[in-house]
Length: 171
Image (cartoon, rainbow, N blue to C red; front, side, top):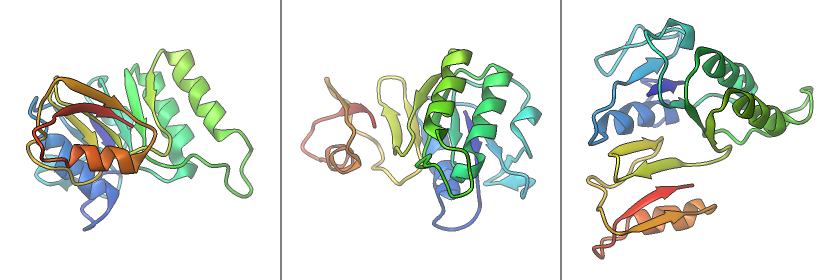
């Protein structure tokens, strides 16, 4: 899993990605990506997706909207299989309209699965993957129910439920 926008800055999305993803029960190989750092949380930090030693199954894009298109295109060109876009992907002032459509087109042309934009990521309890950039309970309780929701509030409430119900969830 590549963590584009990984950071040491306390309280940032990039710092939370670095804390949460490696805590996945499946213990995925994690590649922090940020040209500002040589190392984050004891992991070597790569300046660019092109510097990773292998294509990855998942790219988490914790970058500003202005960088989403170039980073998703770089992941697609490398043959990375899927991506999560945390940013809102709104058309910014002075930028060409249709960012969300362009992002969807990049993913579609590359055969990539895409989660987002403007999402909280996902937790797959069955596969042991925490593809999130926020603090979640540890461990996430497993159970027979799956939840896919457009609402981050519903997601957060259900994920934090301690009534013995477990979920594999995506937002």
